[in-house]
Length: 251
Image 1 (cartoon, rainbow, N blue to C red):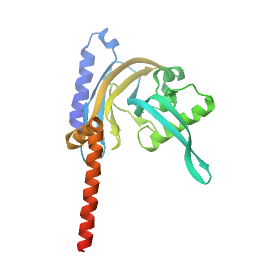
Image 2 (image 1 turned 180 degrees about the horizontal axis):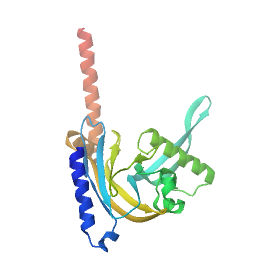
Image 3 (image 1 turned 180 degrees about the vertical axis):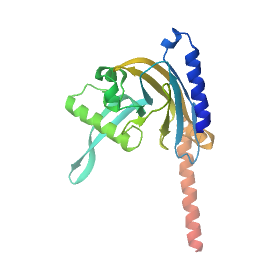
């Protein structure tokens, strides 16, 4: 989206807020996305979605994008008899597959610690709960830290906060970058208005990431008809091997 249309949209949002009665302005945030559906097709290399909005009063803005959740296994390798093998594993329940955070100032400076813990603002505040009762709490924390490192290495968790840009006193925007390996599913985009360390307003909007086209049909077939998909894959491999052998014999 070009800067001029964005500025027009933000200005319209600001004017709409200004026109609201005083009591309505107690609802302090209006936000939207440049697109609510990101389509993953063959050759998908990532995408950028623009979040923009306006505030009904003074404060700092924090944006958190998370989803979809699933149980995630973290394994630890150890050297046994000269070979590296998986020796320990911990499964965490309901782990966000993607987590991104942005703010106009460092979050630690504008949001109280108890508010960050309550709303899970920041990867260090994610509640990563093991599916089984941990035998050693310190070990569980080590596995949780490893999970976050792995997600950051894959580009799925924010290694640092992105910037929310203010245009004037109330209008703001921030780009949301989605990497090529972003998981499909329904995401939640949360925007918080913070004043004196406390969240004074919040709004949430959905974002859907979905496969479409041939890749989507192949994905659905592989999951819904797994035995047939496996059989077809084996037949294709056999035919490819036979054809390669035939060509090399002729050469």
